[in-house]
Image (cartoon, rainbow, N blue to C red; front, side, top):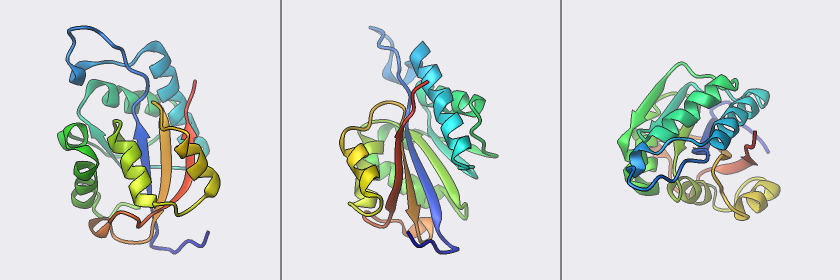
Amino acid sequence: MCRGSDDRTLVLLRHAKAEQVPGKTDHDRELTDRGRRDATAAGRWLHDQGVVAELVICSTSKRTRQTWEYAARGGAHTEFVEYRRAVYQNGSAGVLQTIREDAGEVRTLVVVGHAPSIPDLASGLSDGQGSHDAHVAMGEGFPTGGLAVLRFPGEWSDLEQGDCSLERFHVCRG
């Protein structure tokens, strides 16, 4: 794949495995033990792949916050984390709008969110472009702890469906 010097990297990370507790609000659900291990594995994978986020945009839910917290413990790094309720409640269109408005000039952005928003956005942004193997793997499902690495040759404010190429898809297990 040919990369230009202005290319940007977008990592879409679905939160790790969360508890199912009757009576607990969805927003307050926490990671399970497996979820904490998987989130740590996500951080280790990002570190091993040399992906260093200049910015993380994270849903406000407890499980997404914990996913990034444990990913950082596993070696993922960023200087800035912004929490956006739109990533929690506004679907893939809301996540896309948040990226357009908040990513600014960063080159590498990680978004930590939920299904179906994160899988839908990864699929729509790449629209079959990029690595065949990554598309096959993503097509088999986008479970908790799944992440898609996309390349975008433009300004975040101009990001539209079909503008990215899917470079890698990985399911993090710890």
